[in-house]
Length: 615
Ligand SMILES: Cc1ncc(C[n+]2csc(CCOP(=O)(O)OP(=O)(O)O)c2C)c(N)n1
Image 1 (tube, rainbow, N blue to C red):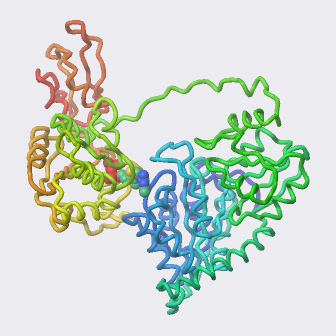
Image 2: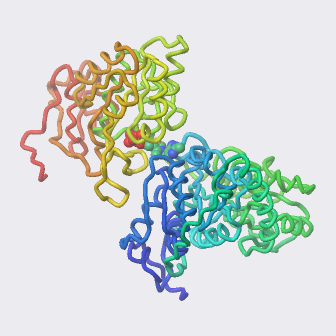
């Protein structure tokens, strides 16, 4: 491979080129997709979730010839079942998800370690230390240990590509799914990647093997023992793997580290000897012992849990880790440096105590014209107790809407609403608010539960025909596949009826009066009443842009009613009325949803005269 300049961007042609002649600049996610193509992946499935989403999207972009079957699954468990089924059929398979997705897929994941695979199966968990875009920051390395599967932790894009290729080989060699664990910084940062050649791996074909794939107790018991034997074999091989290496430097301090933390250690403490783990489960104990024997002090630098540290301590070695480096939140070069200072390995320097400066924090807001706004104004007016869910609408919990009382995990809204309704403690009507993608992901069983057990409550399904929060991915009610092909559309009202909803109302969320009435009637109805809003997301798949509005300044009495919407297109103006500031509309960003005009008591918000779509 020549070392000429990389392409400046993730050029789709280079990304998908069978054998690029020069290095390419790829994000970790793109590099995983590239590695999977080079390894001959045949089937790829998963559910969107930051920071993993671009893995499957990149696979589609780099495969115009459609050699790989790629799907957005309804949830991560379905995705892993699809991938396991493909591997059982003899086709190399990949399943990608964010860290909490592995909780959803865990039921299959834990037993897939027993069944093993036929063709290689690689599961990617993209973790989110620092909670940039998640509900928690769990450390999924513990899942590798829990399930007893090998885990690879790339530290950059090149390793993301290399380790993915290697993961397929390991999976087949040890007949086990392999977990690739990345973190936000690895998934999203771009780096130069020397690619290999895209392969079309042969499909091995299905072979009936019930003792391996039918996990009856009588089969599962020996498969568990077989897994432990495979783990033992891996423990030997991991010691020899080029994915792990000791980098000998000064002998005063030795650091065991993996993933992005490796680069932080190298940056702030370049003199330290390092055991860099790429294949981090099972732990290469002999390598750890070798490092420990050659250095004065042994430290572990790892994000989140003391996953490596506890295993190193269990070897009877004196080791330091979480006393110096935080167990919560994301590491960064500065915090790693401070950890080494606390440990007395580095002395505090000017640059270490230097503040990196404050970036302006801007709270997230809903988009101008977001159809999720009006239903929450209505719920607040109704005094509803709202069990919320995960999606763009979670922002309804924040100012100015403040109309959501809980958000825990995808699909939890409906089950929690059942509990709230049954608690007898809710001071108002109990409503579960859930997006369409989330409803299909994990809401269906809970709605069936509510109906089956006759719970009186309302379910508000915010149907914007996409998975907006993660960037607008398709789902089974969106009418398209991940490749943009037309698909069957789940009929949500009919589905709710079939699951047992006592009434279903479909309403235009841009019509505030109708939305309020629908929710009010639903709250008063017996059984499980469902209200479904039906406006598409303003950003996807095409940006919605209708006739924009402006404020007639003379009519504005600065009552601020429109400010309750939290619409970013509405801002303060220079004008005043009785000591209060009047408002104005930012015309270029207004989508013309009309909701502000509906709340304005003085009809100050009107369509911009003379506007035509072309402008
Ligand atoms: C188990 C799990 N998988 C994936 C995610 C990432 N995620 C957060 S919200 C969401 C879906 C949002 O779509 P939808 O419910 O339709 O609401 P919208 O954002 O479109 O309003 C996803 C995929 C997650 N938080 N948890």
